[in-house]
Image 1 (cartoon, rainbow, N blue to C red):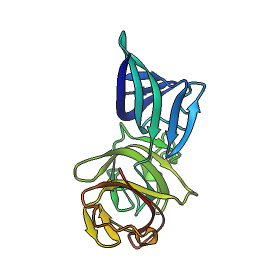
Image 2 (image 1 turned 30 degrees about the vertical axis):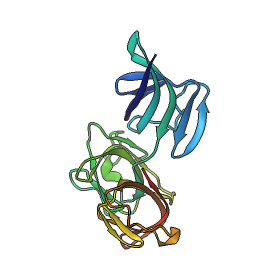
Image 3 (image 1 turned 135 degrees about the vertical axis):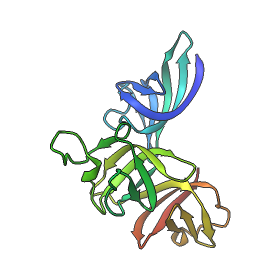
Length: 218
């Protein structure tokens, strides 16, 4: 078999379809935001993995059928989670934790977002100011996040952002997009982080500043 590593959004769930390949996930390790378990039944994470989520699949492709493969590890980590700053714009874009999120009506999968049009179809306009949202997608060179998956996360309080550090103000402050992150609580000097891609988690976001509880260089 051909060794394969693919990173793209999920298009279908049953096994798992990524980049046009159907991967059998029976026995694969599923990693969801750092939590690991074995997919013993080949259900691609049951209801926890969903179309639109950007995942990294490690495994192999059948040399006799390049549209089929077997996964040994499937990793999902959200791109962004936090409260909306304001409501969605007329074009459907959002601002979450100071990050601009671009929504494509044809490509972005919406989960748990109300049916404000009464037609049974989720509508991004149903999201409200301050509502918690989980976002998975791809970050463009200008820092905007092109969402492939958005889920309402009302009732949760864990905040997370993955992005490139565009400025630092040592010892404890950095900027991602228009978000300021304070690392004083974890004692992390930010001097070496300019232009690095980082994953940051926190629990307090006020006045445009996220207080970090965890920072990892990607």
